Image 1: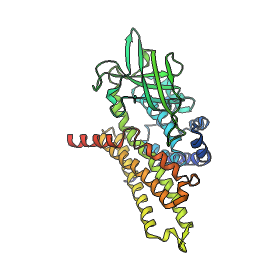
Image 2: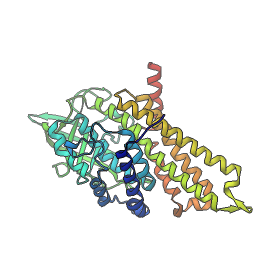
Image 3: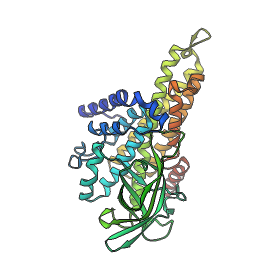
Image 4: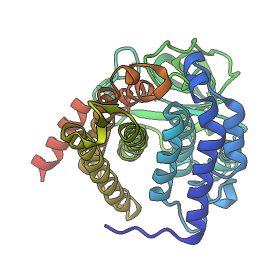
Length: 384
């Protein structure tokens, strides 16, 4: 399928490409080793207008006439080539927090929170997963009980991207019903500094190390009803729509990883010689790079197809699952093949592909595991 960028969109994509190359790439290895999120670069990303691409101008963003999900995915590809962890955290703030406020929030909530997210002044996160409720999202135990004009929230969230550094939090709590019911969940916007809200230290992870992941502890957090996001009891329904889009756009990160691995391999195989000739002359190597290229192209085209469906307002549960399943597995496989092509060099930090492999694997787990995606796809197509 064809997709033509406007002149302004081309400038935005070029800006993202230059920001990735000139600002993120020089420190990518350092922030991976240290496990630190570069907040200064996040603010610069906001200053450049790259964080507000999904938000209307009236809420501090740069989207006029509607957000372009495809352009956003293309920008994420460029950023992921430099640091997948950085774009993961930036995306969690702008999409998982920001987009949910944009879609479900009141005008006052949008005016209060979105400009600071778009500018890079604040970082957001979205809290769903709990110690006993990961893939079983409807089984959460965090509860909110009403007390006049306030809600009292108790519970614990885990594996939350940006939790250790977030200024703003969306948490889903059960306000009625029992675990497993689709109704009865309610979303709330919380802020760091609220009494009873604490976050844990960042987890030590295999990959995406510059993207802080941690726990949220909620001990009698008292929040005014004006901080409810969306309608009472409808939080899980909003969650399902949000997860469909999250699954679709997640694939863009692994497409960027795979493209970076291919670029490294192509340079390496033309320079590296064995048995008196470049590796590029060996058919087994040619077969590997051809497969990586094929899978990148297929992932990219299908992702754009799904994002077009989302822009048209269509339901994409099965399609988003396919896009995520294929693209995320593809990214991991591309990185593993790159390590194999580079041999001993691929196993060392210098050539970056070992970092890309560690980063890529996360997206086969987060935003819905591959196994859950398969179940969702089967449920949708059998239902049809």
